[in-house]
Length: 197
Length: 382
Image (cartoon, rainbow over all chains, first blue to last red):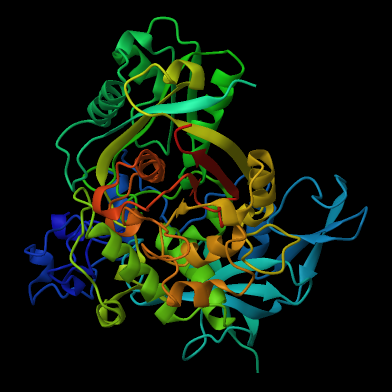
């Protein structure tokens, strides 16, 4: 693959003003402003990245495709939760001792210390606790700008879950939202949120 | 308990491309700090640093320094929340007699090698990231934008406050010959700077820097006979607990620093009004108002007015980030804030000197998101 297809691809370069040298941030891609990435054929907004591209590059030499970076790196605490998401179910843990709900999945209740718990389905209602709109390509293949929301679940107001935004327009902090599941690609389902009707 | 002193400070140049390894950066800063203190490399019996997989580990640096029997070795894994712990734990080791001369440093090629801002590198290996990386939500500016939105929409802050943080710190950097960005800014410049992650603009974000900073710690008794006036460690605290997804919290703020601050001041026997200058971890502008309230410099809800009134500028009631901070001097992951506090307390700060500065507070990242924080209170030469 060409250099122009690296994850550092700068949607952002054009935004740099002369008095704000590349030193400022996080943000400035490795590609210099003179790179081909900013020629008219290669518009800065395209980012030129499909989800498959980084995966194939990561797999170079291994003979088999690497998992997409969008695939969550599940662990032994989270595997059942993600399996439920794939079935379009949102699960929370409910402590058998004190009844507290918790997420993300963990073995022990941080409130009472109990190890006994059960899964409890959530209806997926909540409010927008916060949200951001990314204008830089922090991850490959994400169309820019990209909205991410942090939702406070109605089930118990200290439960905060991140997710994508399916709604039209922009989210509003404090407004009611409901969960919808986003089947990104075969084998990958993520949470997304939209304004509650 | 033995009083512990910072006997010397060393820095490399702050640049976008050091052209050398992080090991070389570390050795240069350490040697400069020892030279400043009037100590030799052979005097060192302890080493302390932290990293996020982006720097030469402490055992490698100890070996490169020629230390064969390391009495104290701290090689912490973690980011900005730990910057003060490196100094604090080293001070505890000296206070308890475990080691006699400890060098503490942070060395990074955070622009030319390992982009601290996250572009093009993996998310940290923390389990919680599995729940957000799939949405393209992984880099520090995104995390802190989430916090900023809550503060802005909740009315605690507005963009003029964040802009004033940026403009004020640039005015400090203009008086700092080491600073990477010294051109004065206006609020209009701030408002015209492009979005990185709404609601954060480019000028809300710190620099990415190649650099190292080191300090040398020894007992105050030994430091008294060394080359430079020594700065005393009055108090150290670490704290934390909540992460972004912790249950039991109803807001994204308050940060861990708010819980820790009373312990810090109690350990020093001081109150916020005793602090003459504060070097507050400023990876992103919202952290400054947040910490002004966390540490009790302002009442809850009072930071915006304090900043807008110019009280954090040189000449104000509490000058903050007198070197320009991470926003304008450069990003050495918090340790350049320790070095600046030492400069202020020794009267070495030149055009940006706070007259009569006797006591300084230096904070690490206040614990939002990652859940860990730390801070120091330093006192001037006795």
